[in-house]
Image (cartoon, rainbow over all chains, first blue to last red):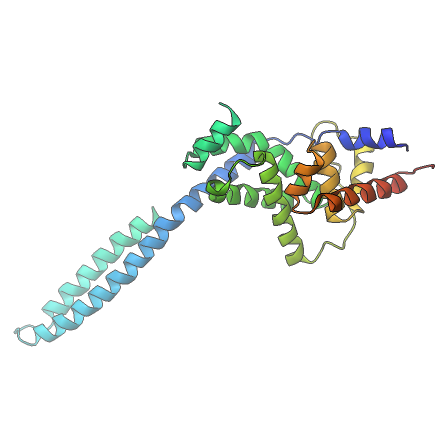
Length: 94
Length: 170
C-alpha cells in the first residue's frame, strides 16, 4: 500500500449513524439532569420539614401536659407530619 | 439556523437548540468514539451521551475560540481517556470483530478498523481527527490537548504502523 492509497482509506468519512434512539436517550438524560437541582431542593425541604415537625412535636408534647387529653396534640402533629411529608415527596417525584 | 446561533440559544438553556446541535454532531462524535473504543458500540454510545451531557452543562464555558465540533471532540477524547483509565483495558488491541455499521461498510473498511485497533489511543484519535473528520493539525492538537509537534508524531507513527499492518510492500 502506498501513501496515496492509505490517505484515500483514512480520508473516508466515518459511517453515518442514525440519530433516532441516541437523540431520544440524550434528551431524556438532559431532562433528568435539569430536574436534579429541583430534586435536591425537595429533599432539603423534606429534611427541614422533618426538623421543624420534630421541634413542634417536642413543644406539643410539653404543651399537651396542660390538656386533659394527652394524646390529642401529638396525634394532630403526627397527622400533619404525614400530610406534609406526602405532599413534599410527591412534588419531589415530579 | 446557523450553528453559532444554535450554540448561543443552547447556552441560554434552550433544549431544542441543543437537541439540534446534538443531531448535527452525534454521528461524528459516536464514530470517533467507536474507533477509540475499538468497535465497542455500547461503550462508544455511553461515552457519546456523557460527552453531550458534559457539553450541555458546560456550554456557558464555550467561548467560541474553536469550532463547536472541535470542542465536542475534546470532551469526547477526555471522556474516553477517563473511561480507559477506569477500565484499564486500553492495552487490549483488537477490534471487537463486528463490521462497522452504516453505509459504506466493506472489507477494506474492516481491515482499516482492525489495523487502527492496533494503534495507541492518541494515534487513533490523531489520525481520525486529521483525516476522517477533516480537522487541521492545529485544531486536532487543540482537541487532543497536546502540542502540535506531538500530534504530528502521532500521525506519522500511526501512518507507518498502518502501512506495515495493511501490507506495505516498500
